[in-house]
Length: 108
Image (tube, rainbow, N blue to C red; front, side, top):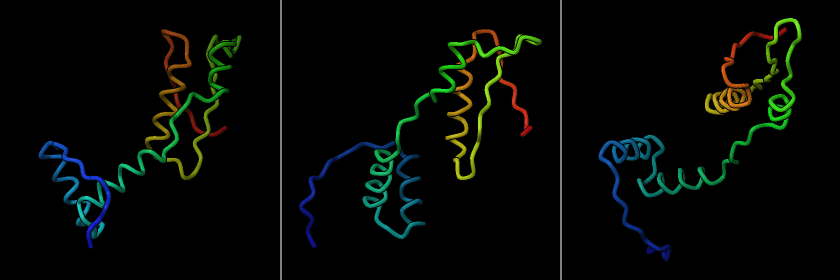
């Protein structure tokens, strides 16, 4: 059954072509369907923005007088992907004053 969708030629590195071929086989679809699916999904992801509470903490200093530490409370919720957690940590790191470092602690 012919398709009326426009066609486009692209060049891919061999390694990427193999990843697409393998992923398409695992998903039991054509390479084209795999590429279209992945491209579409990339446009559906909302861009990450630094959360307002991090911006406020960076602007106010949010320091603890006794230690001079900047305290940011970050919540990692069930369902967050590793990439989302890493983006959250990167945003927190960008919100900290220069010369400080990010230290993770558990709940409580």
